[in-house]
Image (cartoon, rainbow, N blue to C red; front, side, top):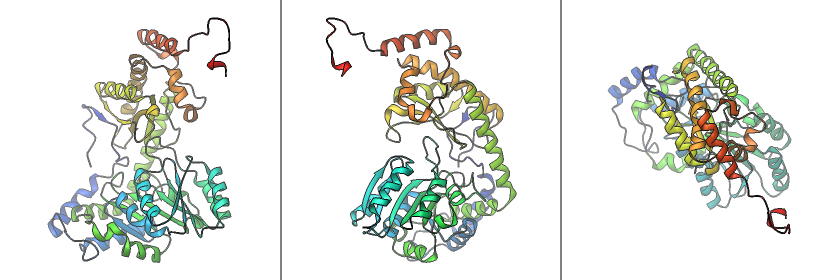
Amino acid sequence: MSRVPPHHGPRHVGSGGAGGTDGPSRTTTYEAVERYGTQFSSSRAYLSSPAYPEADAALGELLGRPTILAPSTSMGHLAALPTVIGGDDVLLLDHQVHHSVQTAAKLAQAQGTRVELLPHNDVRTLRRRVEELRRGHPRIWYALDGLYSMYADFAPFAELNDLMAERGQLWLYVDDAHAFSWTGRPGRGRALEALSPLALSRSVVAGSLNKSFAAAGGALTFPDAETRRRVFTVGGPLIFSGPVQPPMLGAVIASVHLHRTPAVTARQERLLHLIRLFNRLAADRGLPVVSRSEAPIRCVAAGGPQVTYNLTARLRAAGYFTDAATSPAVPAKRSGARITITTHHTDADIAGLVDALADALPRALAEEGESVTALRRAFHRQLGDQPVLPAAAWPDATRRAAGRAVRASRPAPVTGSGCAGPASR
């Protein structure tokens, strides 16, 4: 995992390694290279590195469930989802569920499974569809993310717990890739922490070991050993694809050991402090943070792609590397600067980043001929009534340019005979 540059250089606020757990795994990684080499070229269906059973068992013990270590989270979805979901089942996809889950859903659809898209985090619609579908299908699966990777809103687990208690046919397939390690005890993510025991008895939960876990691969967790055995035995990518290689198996094992110590709890507390600091400072400056959640991913709304590229370029010039959240990951008109906070950052880094954002966003909007009004219109569901970029905070020249952009965006007044035109229909 790439480290944050030294304090005197540019600040990297685009890393997925929120927990800062990359350092302790190095020694074990070197030892795995010495013992097993850099590559083990065999499918697990035939033979696996001796470190594999140890890594599988260690992960299962840490996560408290039967677990498979997959080459990646995406490959894990391709193996698990079409295996656990039957042709007579129904698969309901959250509209914003990760692309890798949507890709795996096509395999389930090809074997006869009915697949539908539902509005994002809409438990009311989910409840209605479960009621409508329950008589004709043995199981109804709902696929979702535990933490959504662009806007950083969490799944509504409390409501899902209630619904699963009411409807025994409802099952969950959760991609919790972006929540592993930095949250949950001991770093097991959001879903395994927030779902009730009853809900977990009907849930498959996947997570990434490539992000805060500071290793490689994906973890697939199952409600029982039989489901794990079935996926391990017939899940296509687990049979026909290459394994996690020995050096990174060493990193997985080392990271599991680290997560059993108080060090990870201390990192989680430090990260939460930085997230809350960013949220508070951003609110003070009127920055349009798309989700008010306490997650290390922070997305600052910009509007269209050109404003977003302008904004991220200005942030780079100010010494902060951020990602652009834009199409196809999100709708083009609802793009923004995607920031990831890590424990490598300091309070001063966060304060400086907020200052840079507050300076750069009004300038980017004005230079691209856009306005706060248009931004609010695009993100009205996410931003609600929160204050956005008060005019007093804008530099004089930028304020004048923004005013021109707002006036230019207004429709021309209706003139002439006063006859009703299309605008009045």
